[in-house]
Amino acid sequence: MIRLIFILFLFLSNCFAQVKLLIPMEETQTNHLKAYGIAYRHLLSGKELDWLLNYHGGSFMFNYSKNLEEECKTNKVSYELLNGTETAQVYAFVQDENNNTELVRLEKAARIAVYVPPNALPWDDAVQLALDYAGIPYEKLWDEEVLSGKLKGFDWIHLHHEDFTGQYGKFFASFATTDWYLIQKKTNEDMAKKLGYSKVSQLKRDVVKKLNEYIANGGFLFSMCSATDTYDISLATENTDICAEIYDGDPLDIKANEKLDYSNCIAFENFKIILDPLIYEYSNIDITDELLYIGQYNDNFKLVDFQAKIDPVPSMLTQCHTSLIKGFMGQTSGFKKEFLKKNVTILGMNEGTNWVRYIHGNYGKGTFTMLGGHDPEDYQHLVGAPATNLDNYPNSPGYRLILNNVLFPAAKKEKNENIKTKSNKKLYLYEKNIFNYTADC
Image (tube, rainbow, N blue to C red; front, side, top):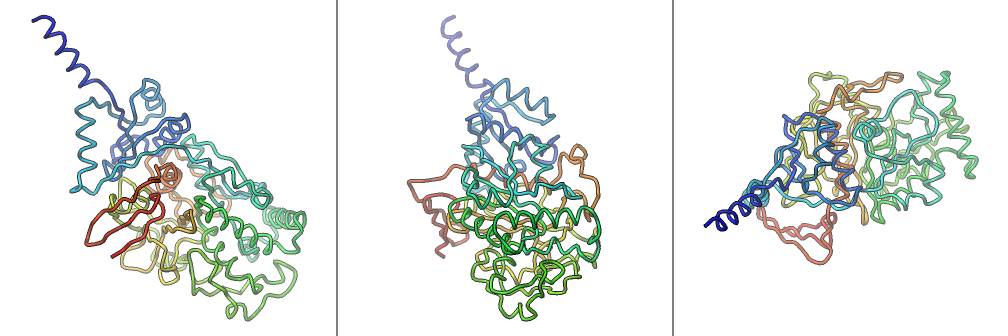
């Protein structure tokens, strides 16, 4: 009898042991941003974890360890310890076909690069702020490294707020005589000359082409602000010159808009270029003027609610503890819907408008994601403004969107089977991996 009681005690102890550590990502989470850092470093150490899409804000589930628990405490990230029964209940809920939830296994941390010029410009970069705050390591690359093939060593790259058209941000009218503008111009011209180009615009176009190759070969690209639309503008203007004499030393082509080629663009089409060199705008893609009209307190965009079991990738990219995100401006604040290519997935937009703020698409074997605006916690981040202190915004929904992009390349790829799922009378076929999918309606 005593032996039976002892065996029963061991069995119950095993069932209710602390076998999992859950980091819930709902509104009650004390530090959403540093939770991503914990997840990334866990992957970097060679371990795996589960991303529970749409479960308490997109929670993370880990095998329990004392070191992991201590890391949560150190970073002031709230967590829960689950026994075997509680863990089984969570997994059953997430995988229930009646719930809009899904389990995605994260296997390997992406090797991260940030495309950024070597000179310190008078503004910060939200992605670098997020990576630094979360404790996620990355390396910096610029034109020479991109063109020499060093991108092959990285899985994911973020494009700093670059102007790929060779017009130095079109800051001439306001900042042409400032030290930082002159340094920026000289730095770009020196690099172009070093690499054998007569114009900065020609150098930037080849950089974009190399980035296109990187995506097509399976890379993940994320861009914000002016690095979104100027990327495609550079490709569309290969057969013409949109740079005025003040930028490249010779006149622009006044018929440039008749010569645009959208065939190589990855996200946009049918747009027109703003040729006036003194107007602080690249094309009619951008929505900044419209946002200035409605004002900050009327600017909110809503994340699209995807079916997690059907669309795991856009679901990962939109995980958040709120579906309504405070808008934020940049040189490019968002995109007019009518200029998006048909293969582009809208992730977030202002309701009742054609203003799209967050998009995603496949290109070859890889993907691109673009987020309009400059800083999610500084509505109109001006040149020379101080960097945002994320200690003041540990639960920022906008910064969460950035960090979603850092984690999603770690998702497990299904290599040997096709996964078929029916929902809303549509049959989706996932071919070889979850990142390249087609719909057969």
